[in-house]
Figure 1: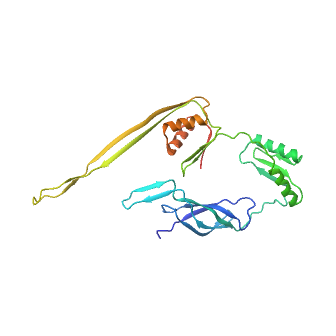
Figure 2: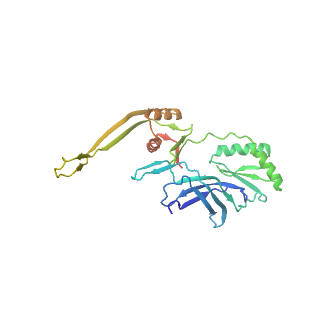
Figure 3: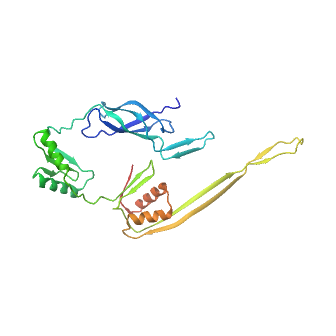
Length: 284
């Protein structure tokens, strides 16, 4: 079958998900398929680590990549055409028990470990409900809950409305290797460094020469290959960063160098290895 592909289907089951609710799924080719663009996923079960079926997935794929091949073997690929998503493509079949209606305490986890933010959340909650909140560590907080589920829901709704100013975000550089997207937050700083970015372009032109004999001479037509190779190296600019250079300085300098997304990733990795990029680099 030329129009079929073996795929791996993954999804994240959110907290309090109930049977019948839709969730998003990611579909990745694991065989020889060159592109999933325009494809449709037939009904497939999604299993948990315990071997139980938790959702059923199906639907049309949305693929951000593009792959085209011609009969002469030439190919054009944009981003990753073998990975797609289906928004709401799976229906939850089994719920996961949370113990919200019976547990004496509820634990909240912050998105990122930060003791300052955890302490601010504790103080803000205790101002509204004295003594119910405590910090367990840099990520988790414990809330003592009322006896009935109705009172618990009302308390959690009130706590969710409390305004807390989080601590300043840690410096991070996020790189999406599939789409070439690079996101740099405002906390990123640079140590003194110099960047030189060059481009080497090699061009090969094939122009076969044909030797045609005179009529009735008995000779044969001869085709002689002729190749012309040229190389051009441009973009030998150097960008210099002073101590504490900010996000805007980095972006402006890289724009002047005319870097592509793939070159930008290589430059950021080199800055990280040199110790000049004072940020955590995350590749997704």
